[in-house]
Image 1 (cartoon, helix red, strand yellow):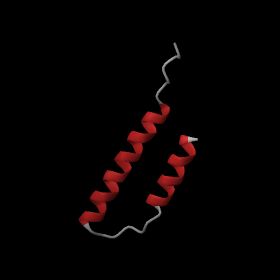
Image 2: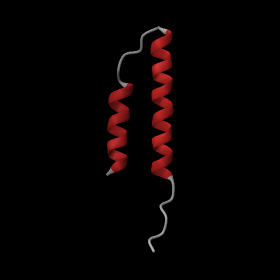
Image 3: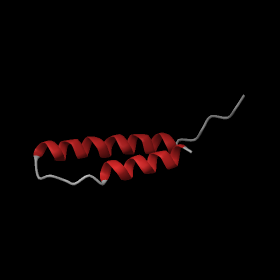
Length: 50
């Protein structure tokens, strides 16, 4: 199931400790943006089969 894979990946990537550096904040922001993009793809309606 793609949704379970998504949740596992999000959990493992977001569980890493946060450092108080600009690079860490930027990396976390890119990660969150990418996760939301993937979540949007999972929630898009699938086209009807022809």
